[in-house]
Image (cartoon, rainbow, N blue to C red; front, top):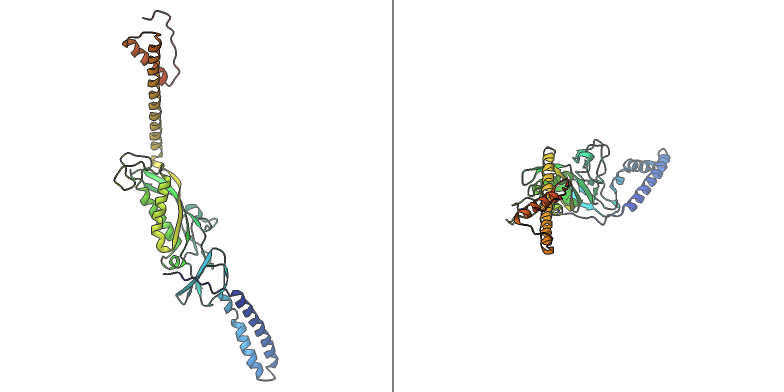
Length: 338
């Protein structure tokens, strides 16, 4: 389906003025014909057409269409697609034309398309309003879709909760209306599917021996550390799925990322243990360097000559002091060296 843009229909004001003038003229002819009904047959020839026109004079108003900035309207005539009104203006089209937008009643948890007080704005799921919606215009603005959080297993099998925000817009109104049943719901479902496919490739944290790029070599990719790359791959995955619907995905961002509730406490303990190990490793490395420097300075300054047994005792004492969690309690030796 190829989009046909109707740019030569901006004659709504002229059609409106002509219709109003014809109604005024028909009103005048009705009054004039009514005064001649009892006098001459000409009165009936004037009165009857005027009454008929006044009866159906509302019909031309159905062809008047107003399009605002960043709006579009897809028109069909007896089931056949005839074109799309995309530019802002006042149009007049065939009154039998019908505006088509299957997603006009669909509400998603996204900017400019949420229904206050409805569950859709909270959960991100689509719902259909019970009220009749006569506005079948298609918004061409950039929309932000925030789907509900998904629970997905990463490449190590750990369940994680992740949510994304997708900025998108309609670029081909014909494809959006006719190629899929409901382009808003279609986008929402494809976002969920693309999110699951990409998240399954990455671990939550950096893990050894994991290939996230597909080149056969392990790398340091992770959901937490490579959020920009993950978001870019999610955007490309969604775009490849929604091109058929005439949609453009401009950007995708991760808005929520955490371990699932059932393993969050265990993973927190694991992260704390890893942090403690790293801190201890740094403390030990620093303490060994300080002990080595102390022994070298004592030897250079000839302060004291220590045998191997005394050096070992000194090293042990210094490491206890430097690596201990509590302040050391010094013991003053006032006796001899040995």
